[in-house]
Length: 363
Ligand code: GLY
Figure 1: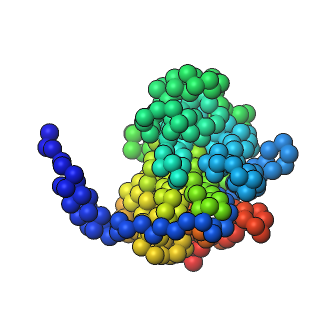
Figure 2: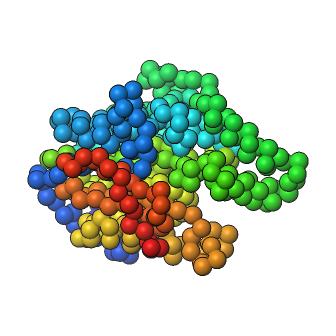
Figure 3: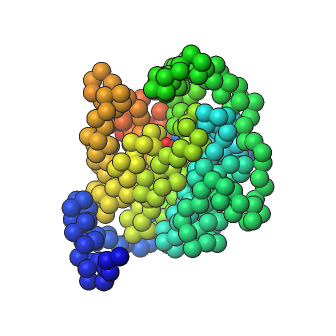
């Protein structure tokens, strides 16, 4: 195995950074930040028993002086536990075999620590298990049975099945549409599975924002401490074992306490090719504002989308990807390929909780 000494490491990483168009110098500023929480739209839809949403609870706890990541995770727990949200946690849409599997990761800016779980079954709140990975292990990502065993050892309740009557009913509907008997050829069966899912979105059975699921939630306190968390049941009806962008650092989430945070919802496979959350944070480090940084990342994803099956008649991506971007001073943006009616992201700051429209790359 080649030995990399520190000098060579610094040289090679500097070259790699230069080649990727990102700069290494952090734009460090401390204090004077405006406490702010941004999240995907479901961060202001699901509510707990007291009628409080994710972004409201996270903001309230941040301004009370709680640890920012604790506050954000308490917020997304509301969405994970909401049986009506079919994109996250309990009641998330299952895989092709009818099994709900969950992915999550979190990053603690000040501590520069992160943790993640993927393909976790039986725990309603994967974000708490991700946090536990960060706090109690030397690792970042635990998957499938290992993640579940770890969760059990940490005292989490493991359930046999996280389906709700609603998610089970939708899965059965999909199953009927894609009966393998009628599609013996694997390629056409895969196409049929994809098309059946899109048909269910078009028929209003599945919220378009829930087909790829997910909540991302990022926050900053008055001291400029930035954290983030992303949690999802992933793509509806996925091949068992499929993991998207959500638990992968740099893709579903990236936080740099010197700069800010970005996280995603939407087609994870597209985001993974660009590690766009990392890219957005790096663009902001170079001095771009959150909106411009997000738009540049969407431009990158669009330029990498060349497979005809993923393009619409106008040659544009036939799917949506959205990013929730926050600077360490509290500036924010929500950017997406497609915005418009019914597509908004959630914000809570000194002006209260609200939905704001996305900045849409395609107008
Ligand atoms: N962005 C969520 C997923 O693709 O799994």
